Image 1 (cartoon, helix red, strand yellow):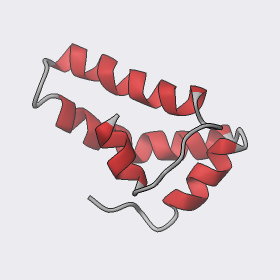
Image 2 (cartoon, rainbow, N blue to C red):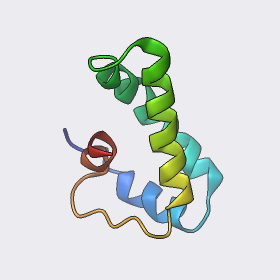
Image 3 (cartoon, helix red, strand yellow):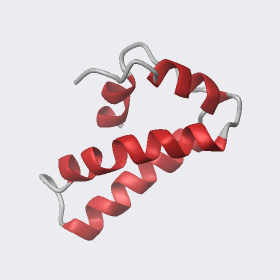
Length: 77
């Protein structure tokens, strides 16, 4: 899966604490991550897992080192 062209920009903004950039990233990836997670766990648990991943992105934003695409990072998490 490839990242959107502006994912690098969004992650740069997120690292600096930009909540709007995080919200854009969340809205972009949440439905896709949820669909992926429901392949492994039931609906409510999938929502919890995806929300935990996204919270981790925000909480660890200054330490995230993307060696691959943003989507690869999110799906791996």
